[in-house]
Length: 162
Image (cartoon, rainbow, N blue to C red; front, top):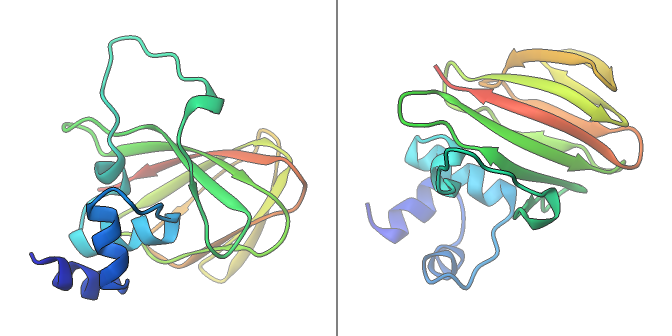
């Protein structure tokens, strides 16, 4: 697939694609999700860190993908190995604009565990308020919104593709 075709399918500018290809770009999470959708691959495939037998990762050292539309950032903690279909993300969010997630590939299920603060998740026409320790699962192949309700909100997302 050409760079122009990928940019068209992802709905992003060709100059943005060119910058990413040369390593000069700093993509948002929206850009990376759009690219993953256009390529029909899980986002983690684009961010896949090297696998180790034992790995300690300090949150301060991990790269995050910021949102362009809300105070929200996603950090890939664990990409699914080839024989598995799940990726694990740490989400950090602040109150303000909600993170509007477009549908992921068909069959995707998201699992959310609140670590700190609280958040509202809207999916399939319903709204759910989560607090520390709460767990929610929902179809990730439907549009969904994540809104932090308190400063310092964190959550662990497990994205499972089927």
